[in-house]
Length: 359
Ligand code: SF4
Ligand code: SF4
Image (cartoon, rainbow, N blue to C red; front, side):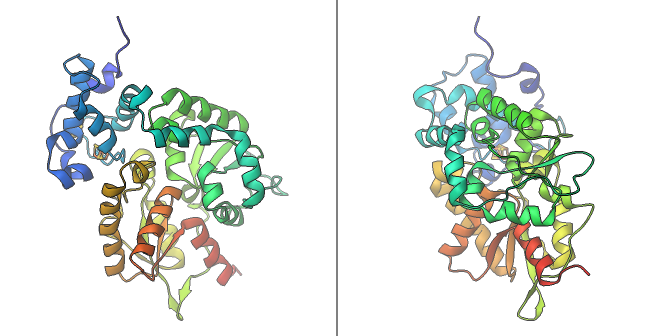
């Protein structure tokens, strides 16, 4: 007998109530039950029971169309852990030639630890020994694999805000990319290795990495940067044209829906600027890990609608708490020739502290 595709306990929890349907962006876009969380769970059950062949095109389409945003989780009265089910589904569905080539290439690149060293020499990230007065418990800053290449200034800003962070050398990838793209074993192995390499609490500037690491290492071990800074608060003020800046936030889906962290970044921004809540701040921006690369048309439709909202809100900045969202927003804003700037929250807070240093 072959192993079941899904953990039977996880799969049996859904009571088909449909409460999740209004929260699901792909159901909102298509109105198709198969594109809803409940519809997808029914497909998973059909696969598990052998009622559908793994090559069935609907299965392949729905594993890929789902954003993996987990907006269906907090609204579910039965506690369905949809994110885990999706990982198990993709692990089975995206095997061999069914795995998207681009996802495979990215995972391969992210798994090559030795690649990051030369890249690190070119893109100067935060580095160095622990702070002169290390805290009682060590706290390590994780350098995200793609973030250190695309946005190396983010880790430097994080270190300015939290000088107690040490930055161990030779870091690899945390495995979030692998877990979300059909290789759960590599996702777990890389997360455990990160846990072995980084002493104490691991602080990350990426909501997606935080949620993945916490799912493997436990929530006590992992903290996203805004959650780490929440108690000490933010200092200074961000000003634009002689007035207090207006700043919106794009939530990280996995940070909000997986770890329940959404108040902290809002509170920090509100301490240094006028915070503006976007109507769809909690809804996926379409970046969704590799989604913007694998399904560019749908991803662009999602972000373009968000950019219109950002423009209408009259903000100066939109802050992100995840590098994928930051890249997605910057691309969308550039395409719309918007004057609004997308920034990582670490850079926003570091800039505010610099303009008006604490007295
Ligand atoms: S996933 Fe949760 S909210 Fe959605 S239909 Fe199933 S039980 Fe209801
Ligand atoms: S993860 Fe997001 S897109 Fe996928 S079913 Fe849940 S709400 Fe819908």
